[in-house]
Image (cartoon, rainbow, N blue to C red):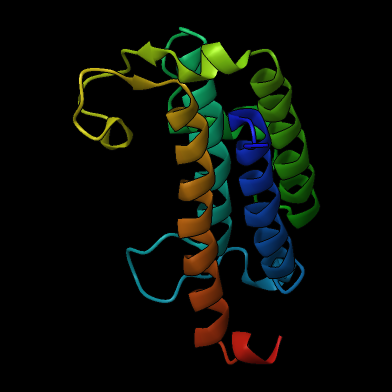
Length: 161
């Protein structure tokens, strides 16, 4: 029997989050304000980017007004506190999963219009609603890779994890 979109999306979210959880377990409070080079996001900035984008994409999917990065950061509390970030990752993901569960398979397959110019739309005028959820997971994985590189540049070799 083929897997439903809901099942596939949840599996992807689970795998991505497992990788992020492994990385988060290696991040210490001392490196939250650190970045590998001037102009790059700090470690906490990378985590904030994961959270803010998830919040923004879900809000937009709900046809709510666009939430700025600053507004998303304010809703999270002190994003320079590791425990606050870890809790926010849990809370925001649970909200996303709850919202995902509100859709039927037909709803997830439904072609929707989504903000012009958003790279996740693949420059198509419409695409399946499920693609927004898929993009959230892909975006998180991208930043997991960046965080892994941050740790590696500090001598924490991911091949030894």
